[in-house]
Amino acid sequence: MKGAWALWNLLGALVLLVGLGVFFLGSRRPPDRVENPPAPVVRAEAEPEEVELKLYFAGREGLVLERRKVRLSPFESRLARALAEMVKGPQLAGARPLLPADSPVPRAFVAGKTVYLDLPGAYRKLGYGVRGESFLLYGLANTALANTEADEVRFLLEGKPAMALIHLSLADPIRRAR
Image (cartoon, rainbow, N blue to C red):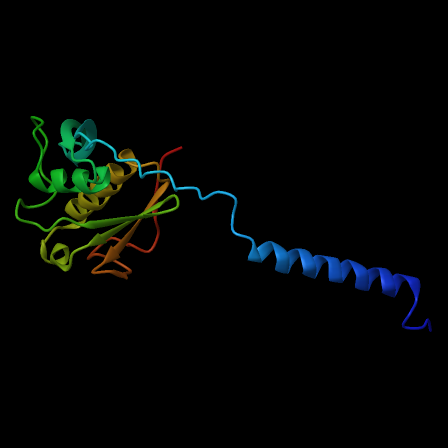
């Protein structure tokens, strides 16, 4: 075992003392200059943007695509607006609405590549059969996928995972066609 006064111990103590001296002397000195932070950038108020939404409604043989131009306010979500437009109903001849006009709009959340559509409890009381429920779920899912970059849609019912709306399973996601 080497003694306390070994060369490496003395060099280490010297480096420690120099470092402490620089630290304490440097902190007592006022800064050479005071820098003012840059002024915040004030943007002009954003203008509403005109976008084309892709909405899916019921048709004679299946779902039909309606392209609708709307003006989005700067902080409005494209997906939320598309769902609100779906509740308003189709403007395309031959298309039928998926929901009654007074229906609540589903809430939408995007997490990664998944859209979560939170269906209101009133959707269970619509009285749809299997075909009507199929149009409803696939119309909502296709609209969500067409207006986002997501790869799949999962459904919630009143904020909670549910096994089925009435007839059709909500357990598995509806995925974008490849």
